[in-house]
Image 1 (cartoon, rainbow, N blue to C red):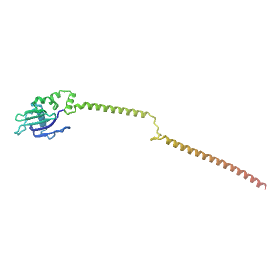
Image 2: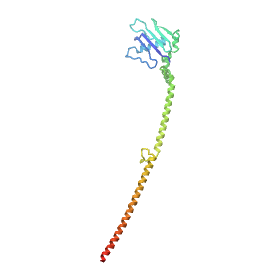
Image 3: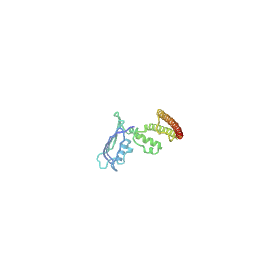
Image 4: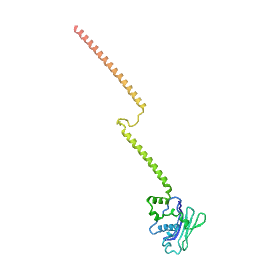
Length: 236
């Protein structure tokens, strides 16, 4: 897309003198309060590039004795000037050859909107015109493709997430199950400790039973001997 690399305006409508050199990339904003010349700058650009059909009704600044002067350098190397009493047009191409309005007309639509054509265009055509003017028309398809790819990726991820959520709800739930994973080796060690304690407890229970049996036997023996002693005492 052809862009304006340099713009000089003097004594056009409300503008006394202004010089603008837009950056190679980015957006140049012309700002200011009301009646300070913002529209005059735009009108000067339209006049400089569009020809006399875009000439302001009163191009000269009020009170100026110097005629309007326009100097525009385009990114394709073209130089456009309007100066002198009659604001004569001078166009110099990148090869140094002089040209005129016909040369400008071959590409001026890249820099300005044809309002009658724009107003009668469809919504899609209007969008394409505006995108072309701001320099993103060629990239629009790429952006749309990337947007669609991202949408499809997110849609697929969403479907997978929904499936996993559904499967998770269908799984049996055990509230007593531990929250953290337990290793098999740790379970085996704990089981072995439990078996060892159970074996030791069983041996202790058997020993207690043996002691109780021996105690009962000794008690019976004591009772028997006591009975014999009582019988002997009674005889003598």
